Length: 411
Image: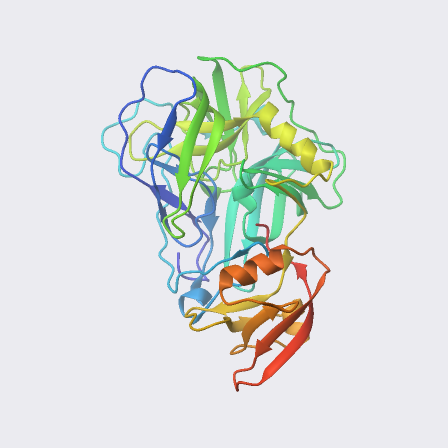
């Protein structure tokens, strides 16, 4: 959608060429397909074999459509946003995969029962600053005090996160405790929460042909639905891709299911016949009438959760939010240094007096010639650190400023 006055609709579709009917279930298969991201608010990972992300972007980017600047460097990355926003249609559900032909024999998702809602939350994240966009997904309650497990891609790029406990209807603001972007796991903490009912986690090993149910915020409506199916493969590996950046990454050790998983189900529980959580729903296929879903085994996810909660950073695990310079990048970058399109109000860059038209040339005395070098320089710091930014003004005068780094969007 492109109109800030209209009702938010789910975005974030990934499409690819249809893939052939899967072979008989077996372990450690790897599928590799570069997927196409439709719309600038696509928030999640697509999957190999023709697929989409199952997080969902909702809202408007109308202010970016007419902007000559790009969204700011976000801690460990410097990103740009396309100059125009092309919304994509919501990914269909009930077996009606986008671009598919023929009817599906898959069972349609139905409204979740009160029992299925227990321990499940819906998540809506504000993306960027000012009038930007939203993303929607699902989460799993881990503690009565409001610790939440979800996918990293559900909260990626968020500047504010709102979580609703579906059994009570109560809504909370959430802080990012930490995340593992490589393995697509994130942990949130609800502000002021108490007395919540945690989900029951399974301590057994899921097996082929086990009956399972995905419970999630399908298509970002805010109403939980349940999609039934069975386990069709274990220890699956999938390669994901992003048309916008051209980047690819892989997820491994996943549970494959034949349930009708759709956009917005990301981060929600995959439960067994006893109602215990066996996995975290992460991705789903598109391009064929029958949907294939994927989930991170709950044991794998909880190992990462424990590392995050313990505050143990690693090559893949980050604690809290990344440091943020708070500058906007000009769409066209020419010459040495990083040309600024503006700064974000309330950030360290704004307080220090940086402005549109300035060109950043160094950080702490080390020259930066490109956006990636600026990104790396900021990523080496923590929130609250002070850095000395060398720059030239639009008039060509050399200057420097001491900038206190603030907390940026979730990476």
